[in-house]
Length: 517
Figure (cartoon, helix red, strand yellow):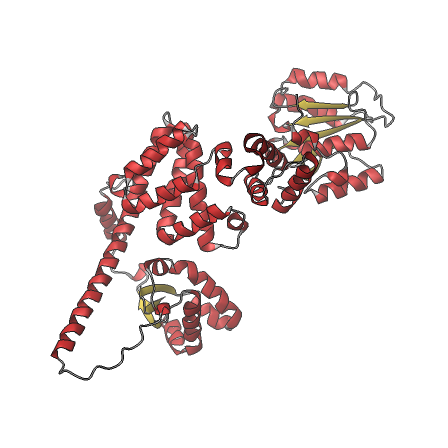
């Protein structure tokens, strides 16, 4: 049987261990000074080199791989009897020239409380020739009395560039040729685990050969294709339930589970979220070109406000779907609520529907205002006497046009405007802007609302022309529109006319709920 690549290319020396410079530096210094601890706790994500470093320590100090290195899986050997057997074995003298024996206890957090307490006595007074190395992905589950008696090293997720470099070295040694795009995508999907990356690398080549594509990788990863995800997003605009249900059925037939599909949808909306607010973050920049194109197009369709509601709904279903007796039905009902919020009765869907209706009402109002303005201009022109035809004026610059997306996403740009203002304005004037609530009225007007009780701030901000001009230039640069800015007071919740009982009554009436005392 052919040896798996992750085992074949397992690091054999400290120099070969990838992505853990702090741990390597500490162990190197201790070996050099012959000052190794009698017990270590290696913690961190899976596949980042915990067990590899444990074996490297053992071989570096001269342990015989067969007789002097004992590796125990605590997930399956977690009872008191297993620990008693371990305690009996540690008394055997080492056969190697190094005169040391190393016991590697993997998944140490899986030991039962009784087994942990049985192991504790040995850990407190170990024989001089024994070194214990405990490895775990959940150090908080290892009992405190064991943690306090070990040297704790925290392992980190391995960086994307280091994983790609390692895969390129393996490619060269194994004479495997996969494109740089495929290697980058494998690195992105491995979540910092070099072992997972090597396994996916090997599986990709074994299944598709040298000409593997990103779309083909989706079947291995259990992911929905970008084409299907794009159709789901488009169906949200057209409320096309049948198309989405057909996509679900096709993905079920191809072997995907409901949770796989939900994970793909969740990842898409999280990527849109990062693109809106942090486009330079690695969560977005490490995506494949096809995924970036998908996120870009979806970002134009989904407003920041709607995205927030959708992410909230996704959080709920991700918590509930695992305990559902019918995960497929749970996913289908969720997508129906996503595409047709008018069919849903839960408060989050109703709230989202209200937002959608308000947005449409605003669009209709603006459209009607434009049509009325056209009619007025037409009547005025018809009433004027005939004149010599004058040259046509240039159409207004496109930068003066603000689309629905820009208006609804203004809250995305406001923090960036504040950040720029902080570096330009004095601390006092910058503090003015942190107390205002901006609201885009239309494509040409921005209102900065201030608590009506703060008369000083209203007066000062109205006098601060430099602040207003800075905001205007920032908006023009970031959104591409010239705007007018006005300063307006607004009533704070405490000074409003409605009492809390009246507000609660209105909420109950809108959402048809009964008050609970």
